[in-house]
Length: 167
Image (cartoon, rainbow, N blue to C red; front, top):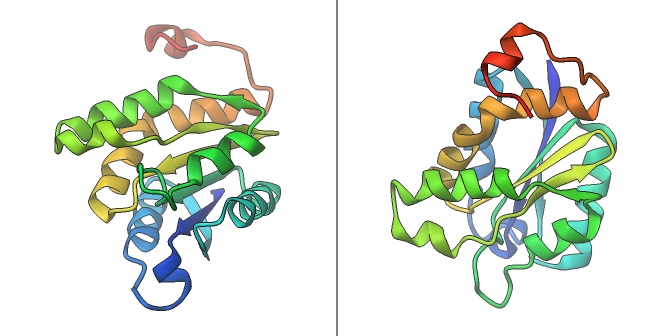
């Protein structure tokens, strides 16, 4: 199983004022797809705290998924923190998530989610709502394992990857 970390970015969840529903929802989806949701961490909407949590999680997991803080309110700084720690940004992955979200709500176009890499770790920003987080994650799961293989240096393409139009 591939180790995954989930960071729920929310002031109210971090303060214990609201229950985190998105982190556990994301963990269930990951576990159903063969990932080990090794940790679910609550982080406040503070850029420095998010950066620190991302770096720490990336040191322990091959996949780091955040939920929350991707909108346009003043406290939504998850994309900025993610850009600050990522070595490469994967615009196509974020675009795929937004496209899937638009099938459910026009508000998906307001997402500023960022996806990228840090060493051999893939980082995905998901929306804060449980439904939006699950929709976004499910939209990109088909490319996650291939991305992780590429990050691990497995770049040889066999017949099946050519048929899928791999990167």
